[in-house]
Length: 205
Image (tube, rainbow, N blue to C red; front, side, top):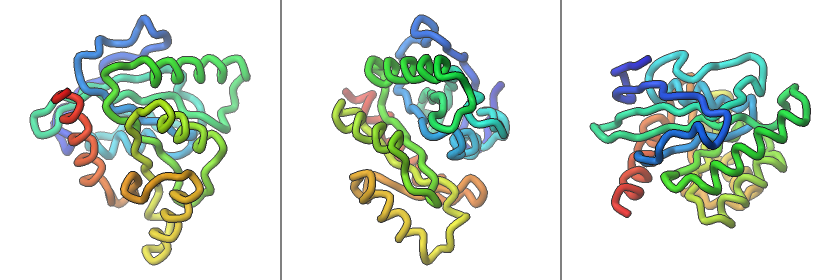
């Protein structure tokens, strides 16, 4: 499938259930990760300007693979990796363990990884899993960006207060975080700017 709307061209590449199925690391890659109900698929669909590119499920934890998409922004080819959600997934522990192993190996070994977008719900306190993800990225030196979703659900005069509290809780600098809403598209332009900048930095290395 492809689209030529807001994000430029977008094409679903493949779903990888094992490392052997990962595509060649020939493009700078932007990974998206977060809790199963954080609005990750909605964020991806908003970025590329097309519903259904990333599946939005009413059942948290439905995605059990790493889904790769090739996109273009300002003529620049970029690859998106939609990682399985974590937390609250009503699946057997053995399946969750497999997800964790797959995501962990991807984040540790993917040389083309330019940025990991960690999504958290602006309305909720971050979980231990969110904190673990942020710490792991910092310890491994993997570039990360904290994106706080569902900003439209909080009154404008309280958004920055919630953002500051989450940043403090996770030990993330304010300029390494941003607000986002798939409903109002607030933050869309800023997120694209961050993505393109990270991709450009990867290609210059």
